Structures are given as C-alpha cells and as structure tokens.
Length: 220
Image 1: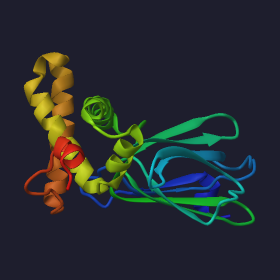
Image 2 (image 1 turned 30 degrees about the vertical axis):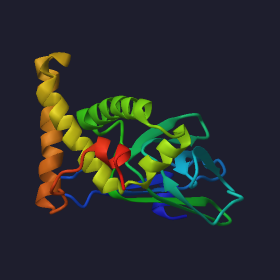
Image 3 (image 1 turned 180 degrees about the vertical axis):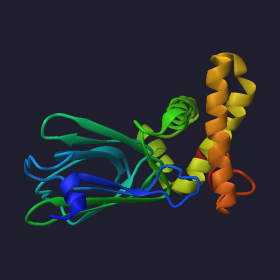
C-alpha cells in the first residue's frame, strides 16, 4: 500500500503561487482498513454522460472500471466506512477510474483549481452560493431541457468557467455592498481579487474576460 492509499485520498498541491485550491485529486475506495487516516468507502461525483448529468457512486470494486467521466460543476463527496465525509468542489474536469485487487483508484484532473470546502474559506463559499444563484436565473431563461442546460454547463472549459465565475463575483461584490456586512464584503472581495491576480500572474486570465451568461445562453 502506498502512502497515498494509506491516507485514503490525496489532494495534489497547487501549482499556483500563492496556492489556489489543488491541482488534482486521487481517491482510493477500498475494503475497511483501520490503519488509514481517512478510510474511504465511496466517492460521489456529478458527471455528464452526453445527454444528462447524473451522480456516480464509486466503491470498491467498481464494476464499470476502467471508466472515464466528464465531471460537472459542483460538489463531490468522499465517504469513509465510519460515516465521516470530506466535501470538495470542482469547476469540471476528467475523472478516470481503475480497479485493482486492493482498491479502486479515482483520479480527478482539471484545468481549474479543485477545492476542499473545509479549507478554502470565503472564496469557495461565495463562489458556490452566488454562482448557484446565477445558474438558477440562467436556467429559468433556458429554452431547452434541464438536461441540456447541465450538459451545456459541463461542456465549458473548467478554467474558462472559473474565470467567468470570478468576474461575476467581482461585479456582484462591487455592486451589492449592502448584501452583507462590511467585514464580510472585504473578506470576500479580497479572496476574489487574490484569485484573479493569481491567474493573471500565471498568464491564465483571459482577455476579454468571459461572462457566464454568454457562455451558457449565447454559446455558438
């Protein structure tokens, strides 16, 4: 058993400076093992299979392995044999699943950062809340099915989606200062501006900056 398997999951360090989320995720569902830090029983991801978005639960052995999935925007969950949970968030990415004798290996990679919700502070909380609200508004304007909306969202490059979300949050926090307390607004704006500057320094901040509405409702 490798050190990563013994831990139960592994979040790869960010390649950004300062760090912004994580670069990738490995998860190792297996039979109960008392010596693991997080004794992973299952991993749950929302995935798009081309015509709809569904939730896939990966346990060991995963009978559909080897498998590749397009992960959708939103939360994923890791569940231990004792019932403990770890919750993260992805802007989208590729999930590859393989099974061997001792465990099933899930590898999630993405052009955008992957977040541990417990560790990410104000950025992820603001990102999740406000982006979900905007997506609900866009869904109400969408002329096709909910499944088609989900697949349109999943088809957007994860880094492009991340930039569009940060741009939307920057505008929102500038124009809705009364929505929360001054200290909360300052913390949220600081987190968003730091993320934008980090992408700019890495040469990954697009120009012109994409807008979420155009990416979904007016995509070619």
